[in-house]
Image (tube, rainbow, N blue to C red; front, top):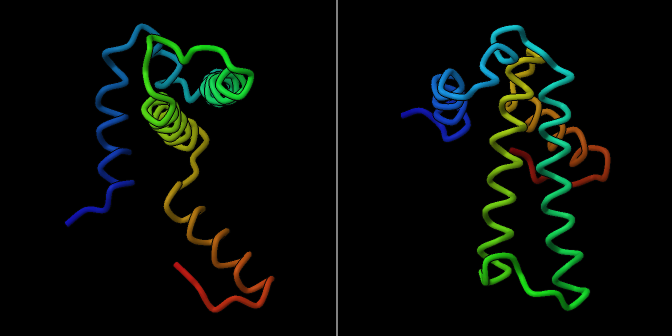
Length: 110
């Protein structure tokens, strides 16, 4: 069975052709996708800022559902960014997590 990051990678690449910016994906436009990733991250930060400021959460959603949506958007954009940058997201995640665990003396590894 494929892991979820592999399923996301394949689905993301297949679905990308249905968006008007598909040429950016085909070109491997890392600048475009880094900005898209930053934009999604900014949306999450703005949502949390508004919540703690006391503003109403967008569209009357509960904050946990709104955060869930934004986190998913970030992961989707991160995967697209990694694809155009030639980075294997799963390998990068495992390597960084394990490296940090070893650095701090933890035996918890992925």
